[in-house]
Length: 592
Image (tube, rainbow, N blue to C red; front, side, top):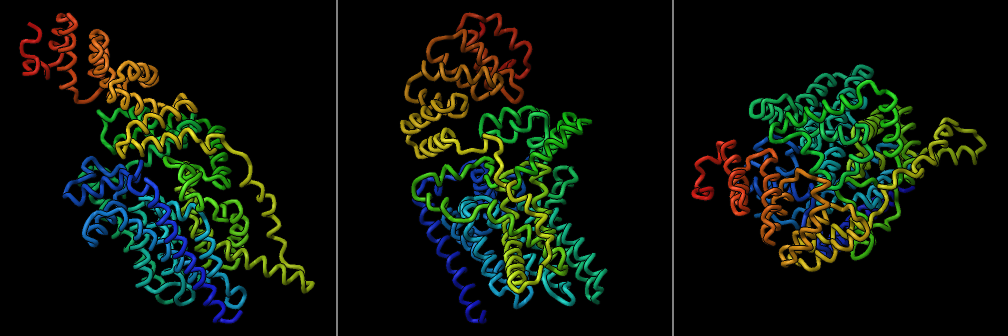
């Protein structure tokens, strides 16, 4: 293939990457998702706005890694304000840059002359995967981390005898460090690359390799130093980045892990996290609690541990995109974004080619071994923690490169067979793995129209369209009566419309399921009060008062309700047992 033809092919792929992202941005901004970040995206955007306002969104510690909100805040200051469109455009640009880097790396993956199209193939695989575009559009970390990790890989590739010089190694260390501060699982890949550089240097022994290794390690350490220093000095915890690894580990590693791993955001997730008693524990202590709880539940149960890890290993390579918090099928089942779901590549289709390429790169040696090494390092957390398409996307740039190498290997095999020369049969060992991505897995990974209706109801509520939200929540509950979040939102929406009796009836089963949820208890008590059921109002407000936390104002309202219900003696007993209520101005004369 001539050099001009190769260049034209690569430019065509880059142009396609730009066109798909431009169309994706237009489609995305035809929906309400573009204006209303949800779940983790909402948290990141809220943290960003607090940083811009001079507030500290991490006052209690780094529950989530702080890198992404800081990047968004810097972007906002550079562009003159917090604008979601600017973030969307910036992340689309990150995706194009990642595609360009993969094209450049793809040229190096395959020896020159064997497959000059390998760069274009790697860029095309990355571009035509629906999850790539969907995560780039949202206010989530993959667009940034994929760019950082691919950039680091490009910097580490090359140099004398395959070892980078100190300056590229230092820049790669900084990029990897920033990726870790954005998403801590990249630390495994960073340590793996340091080990690879050390091993490579010992084998090849070029003069610069000790300085390169030192530069990579020092730069990585410098990038992690701010968060590690804050954890040690401000939060008194020896942690490099954030303190939520314990909860994520527990979600995927307990005797009921199939339930906890699929907990929906909102009330189901809240009910679990309250078991860590946040009124008694800070962020770091809650993290330790979940680690300890996982050890207690699985300690000594080696058969259960093996079953859990083995099942997650199978799920982690399944063709189904396992949702976590957000299910993008709700965005692409119909409407302006439906075309994204029809992009042709799927995980299970690309995986066999990537595995063939990973084996070839491992056998070939040289810098190409960084690809299967990094892929394995970034895939490992899916097995050890929990399986989710969001976390698996970190491996997609590496899968794109490995699949380009795999296609080249298959091309070589075809040429050998045509020439009557039997090639290596080692790749035949991969054939039994081909059906694995298509085996059926847990039904909870399937498309859930009830959840999509719930999400649509949330969007309608955020737009102020309360009647539309109520109707959507009703439809969601008709399909899934145990959608407690939809029940909660519907009850509150009906209460605002004056439908107090319906709101009370909706809330009662929720309180049976989640009996110590303070906001629901407080809401139900007020509803009972509005409808004149003072005894029930007092009893329910008393339950809210007894939920751990700072509840002085709730205690005052509880005592006042007891007095109104003619139960002043009980009110006096409550005040006598609660020093914070004694002499409170809100209770002056109430119990006389």
